[in-house]
Length: 196
Ligand SMILES: [Zn+2]
Image (cartoon, rainbow, N blue to C red; front, side):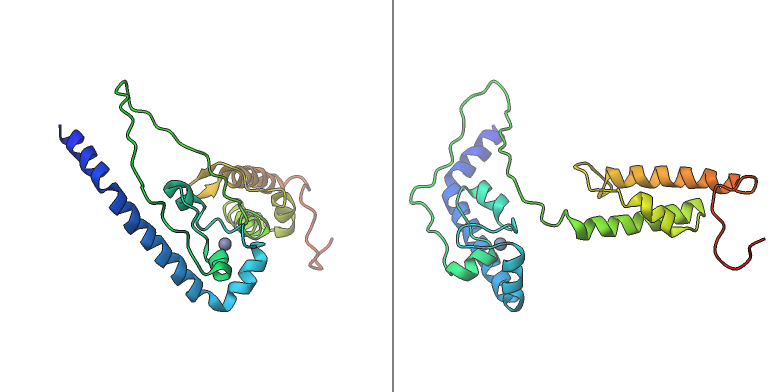
Protein backbone atom coordinates (compact mmCIF):
# COMPACT_ATOMS: atom_id res chain seq x y z
CA UNK A 1 0.00 0.00 0.00
CA UNK A 2 2.80 2.35 0.82
CA UNK A 3 4.31 1.66 -2.56
CA UNK A 4 1.03 2.51 -4.26
CA UNK A 5 0.81 5.77 -2.33
CA UNK A 6 4.41 6.52 -3.19
CA UNK A 7 3.80 5.91 -6.87
CA UNK A 8 0.66 8.05 -6.88
CA UNK A 9 2.41 10.92 -5.15
CA UNK A 10 5.27 10.65 -7.59
CA UNK A 11 2.85 10.69 -10.46
CA UNK A 12 1.14 13.83 -9.18
CA UNK A 13 4.36 15.65 -8.50
CA UNK A 14 6.04 14.62 -11.66
CA UNK A 15 5.46 17.75 -13.73
CA UNK A 16 6.74 20.00 -10.96
CA UNK A 17 9.71 17.81 -10.22
CA UNK A 18 10.52 17.74 -13.90
CA UNK A 19 10.45 21.52 -14.13
CA UNK A 20 12.66 21.86 -11.05
CA UNK A 21 15.17 19.39 -12.44
CA UNK A 22 15.18 21.06 -15.81
CA UNK A 23 15.79 24.45 -14.24
CA UNK A 24 18.65 23.01 -12.23
CA UNK A 25 20.23 21.51 -15.35
CA UNK A 26 19.95 24.85 -17.10
CA UNK A 27 21.73 26.55 -14.22
CA UNK A 28 24.45 23.90 -14.28
CA UNK A 29 25.08 24.42 -17.98
CA UNK A 30 25.00 28.18 -17.68
CA UNK A 31 27.51 28.04 -14.85
CA UNK A 32 29.82 25.68 -16.76
CA UNK A 33 29.68 28.03 -19.69
CA UNK A 34 30.66 31.02 -17.56
CA UNK A 35 33.35 29.18 -15.59
CA UNK A 36 34.95 27.87 -18.79
CA UNK A 37 34.46 31.02 -20.82
CA UNK A 38 38.21 31.55 -21.19
CA UNK A 39 38.87 28.13 -22.66
CA UNK A 40 35.52 27.68 -24.40
CA UNK A 41 36.99 28.14 -27.88
CA UNK A 42 39.69 25.56 -27.31
CA UNK A 43 37.16 23.10 -25.95
CA UNK A 44 34.84 23.67 -28.88
CA UNK A 45 37.65 22.95 -31.27
CA UNK A 46 38.58 19.80 -29.37
CA UNK A 47 34.99 18.54 -29.26
CA UNK A 48 34.20 19.55 -32.85
CA UNK A 49 31.27 21.60 -31.65
CA UNK A 50 28.70 23.02 -34.04
CA UNK A 51 25.15 24.26 -33.53
CA UNK A 52 23.67 20.79 -33.54
CA UNK A 53 26.32 18.49 -32.20
CA UNK A 54 29.25 18.31 -29.83
CA UNK A 55 31.39 15.36 -28.83
CA UNK A 56 31.76 16.27 -25.17
CA UNK A 57 28.82 14.13 -24.07
CA UNK A 58 28.15 16.53 -21.18
CA UNK A 59 24.37 16.44 -21.47
CA UNK A 60 23.84 13.24 -23.47
CA UNK A 61 22.70 11.18 -20.51
CA UNK A 62 20.52 13.80 -18.85
CA UNK A 63 18.94 14.70 -22.20
CA UNK A 64 18.00 11.08 -22.75
CA UNK A 65 16.71 10.74 -19.23
CA UNK A 66 14.57 13.86 -19.45
CA UNK A 67 13.67 13.30 -23.11
CA UNK A 68 14.44 16.89 -23.88
CA UNK A 69 17.47 18.10 -25.76
CA UNK A 70 19.62 20.02 -23.30
CA UNK A 71 22.54 21.76 -25.01
CA UNK A 72 25.98 21.17 -23.52
CA UNK A 73 27.87 24.24 -22.35
CA UNK A 74 29.61 24.44 -25.75
CA UNK A 75 26.48 24.46 -27.85
CA UNK A 76 24.87 26.74 -25.31
CA UNK A 77 27.74 29.18 -25.75
CA UNK A 78 26.70 29.48 -29.39
CA UNK A 79 22.92 29.32 -29.07
CA UNK A 80 22.50 31.11 -25.77
CA UNK A 81 19.12 29.53 -25.20
CA UNK A 82 17.40 26.42 -23.94
CA UNK A 83 14.39 24.63 -25.30
CA UNK A 84 11.02 25.30 -23.71
CA UNK A 85 9.55 22.45 -21.72
CA UNK A 86 6.70 20.76 -23.57
CA UNK A 87 3.30 21.86 -22.21
CA UNK A 88 1.83 18.71 -20.77
CA UNK A 89 4.44 16.49 -19.30
CA UNK A 90 2.96 13.35 -17.89
CA UNK A 91 4.47 10.35 -16.22
CA UNK A 92 3.04 7.21 -17.75
CA UNK A 93 3.15 4.30 -15.39
CA UNK A 94 2.55 0.92 -16.91
CA UNK A 95 -0.30 -0.95 -15.26
CA UNK A 96 1.25 -4.27 -16.08
CA UNK A 97 1.53 -6.11 -12.76
CA UNK A 98 3.10 -9.33 -13.89
CA UNK A 99 6.51 -8.31 -12.77
CA UNK A 100 9.04 -5.59 -12.56
CA UNK A 101 10.56 -4.67 -15.87
CA UNK A 102 13.57 -2.60 -16.40
CA UNK A 103 13.58 -0.87 -19.73
CA UNK A 104 16.70 0.91 -20.74
CA UNK A 105 17.95 2.62 -23.80
CA UNK A 106 21.56 2.53 -24.81
CA UNK A 107 23.03 5.97 -25.07
CA UNK A 108 26.28 6.29 -26.94
CA UNK A 109 28.67 8.72 -25.37
CA UNK A 110 31.74 9.30 -27.52
CA UNK A 111 34.84 8.32 -25.61
CA UNK A 112 36.96 11.28 -26.57
CA UNK A 113 39.08 10.72 -23.50
CA UNK A 114 39.71 7.06 -24.21
CA UNK A 115 42.46 7.87 -26.62
CA UNK A 116 46.13 8.67 -26.41
CA UNK A 117 46.17 10.68 -23.20
CA UNK A 118 44.73 8.11 -20.84
CA UNK A 119 46.36 5.22 -22.67
CA UNK A 120 49.76 6.85 -22.20
CA UNK A 121 49.12 7.40 -18.52
CA UNK A 122 48.08 3.79 -18.06
CA UNK A 123 51.13 2.54 -19.92
CA UNK A 124 53.45 4.62 -17.74
CA UNK A 125 51.71 3.40 -14.64
CA UNK A 126 52.04 -0.20 -15.84
CA UNK A 127 55.77 0.22 -16.44
CA UNK A 128 56.27 1.54 -12.91
CA UNK A 129 54.22 -1.22 -11.34
CA UNK A 130 55.94 -3.99 -13.28
CA UNK A 131 59.35 -2.54 -12.52
CA UNK A 132 58.58 -2.25 -8.83
CA UNK A 133 57.25 -5.75 -8.32
CA UNK A 134 59.57 -7.62 -10.65
CA UNK A 135 62.74 -5.70 -9.65
CA UNK A 136 63.52 -5.69 -13.34
CA UNK A 137 65.12 -2.35 -14.05
CA UNK A 138 65.17 -2.04 -17.82
CA UNK A 139 62.34 0.38 -18.42
CA UNK A 140 62.87 0.37 -22.17
CA UNK A 141 62.17 -3.35 -22.42
CA UNK A 142 59.04 -3.04 -20.29
CA UNK A 143 57.91 0.04 -22.18
CA UNK A 144 58.25 -1.81 -25.43
CA UNK A 145 55.95 -4.58 -24.21
CA UNK A 146 53.52 -2.28 -22.48
CA UNK A 147 53.18 -0.12 -25.59
CA UNK A 148 50.64 -2.65 -26.83
CA UNK A 149 48.42 -1.96 -23.81
CA UNK A 150 45.11 -0.49 -24.93
CA UNK A 151 42.02 0.49 -23.01
CA UNK A 152 39.35 -2.18 -23.25
CA UNK A 153 35.69 -2.10 -22.35
CA UNK A 154 35.91 -3.81 -18.96
CA UNK A 155 37.07 -2.14 -15.81
CA UNK A 156 38.20 -3.42 -12.44
CA UNK A 157 39.07 -1.09 -9.58
CA UNK A 158 38.57 1.81 -11.94
CA UNK A 159 41.17 0.66 -14.45
CA UNK A 160 40.71 -1.37 -17.62
CA UNK A 161 41.16 -5.09 -17.14
CA UNK A 162 43.73 -5.02 -19.95
CA UNK A 163 45.91 -3.02 -17.58
CA UNK A 164 45.78 -5.76 -14.93
CA UNK A 165 46.56 -8.39 -17.54
CA UNK A 166 49.63 -6.55 -18.80
CA UNK A 167 50.89 -5.84 -15.32
CA UNK A 168 50.43 -9.41 -14.14
CA UNK A 169 52.05 -10.83 -17.26
CA UNK A 170 54.91 -8.34 -17.10
CA UNK A 171 55.69 -9.03 -13.46
CA UNK A 172 55.73 -12.80 -13.80
CA UNK A 173 57.72 -12.69 -17.02
CA UNK A 174 60.46 -10.43 -15.76
CA UNK A 175 60.52 -11.85 -12.29
CA UNK A 176 61.46 -15.21 -13.72
CA UNK A 177 63.93 -13.69 -16.13
CA UNK A 178 65.67 -11.85 -13.36
CA UNK A 179 66.10 -14.97 -11.23
CA UNK A 180 67.44 -16.91 -14.18
CA UNK A 181 69.78 -14.17 -15.25
CA UNK A 182 72.43 -15.32 -12.79
CA UNK A 183 72.96 -18.47 -14.80
CA UNK A 184 71.95 -17.51 -18.31
CA UNK A 185 72.38 -14.32 -20.23
CA UNK A 186 68.81 -13.56 -21.09
CA UNK A 187 69.20 -9.91 -20.23
CA UNK A 188 71.65 -8.02 -22.42
CA UNK A 189 74.39 -6.51 -20.22
CA UNK A 190 73.96 -2.87 -19.34
CA UNK A 191 76.15 -0.39 -21.14
CA UNK A 192 77.99 0.96 -18.13
CA UNK A 193 81.60 0.28 -19.05
CA UNK A 194 81.99 -2.85 -16.95
CA UNK A 195 82.26 -5.28 -19.82
CA UNK A 196 84.46 -8.31 -19.44
ZN1 LIG B 1 29.85 20.15 -25.64
